[in-house]
Length: 143
Image (tube, rainbow, N blue to C red):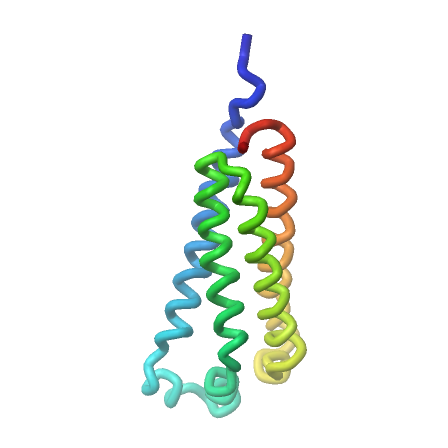
């Protein structure tokens, strides 16, 4: 008889891919948070203005989103139900960050309509991870 609470191979694949995705977000945060003044100075004026005018609350939301997402993935891989709540907190931070990035920063004016592709991907993946973790809990894979 097989144990129905044993996660499938797909569980591990999704968890590892999601962790890699979120670790790439952590790296993006670190790159942005610690960008050198010389690097900012070398940017075109419009891009430089975007970097120089990011409010601290947006940077904080970015950090919570990516570190929360990575922690949520680790908890998911450790089969802990807490992953659900961590993914929810991460998603709230994603929404806060994207409200600024898409609606308040002027990034669309600088980068054009293509500037919405990554934010939409981030939002969709954030929603997916919440629902996936809930489904894993319902199946008994995490507790």
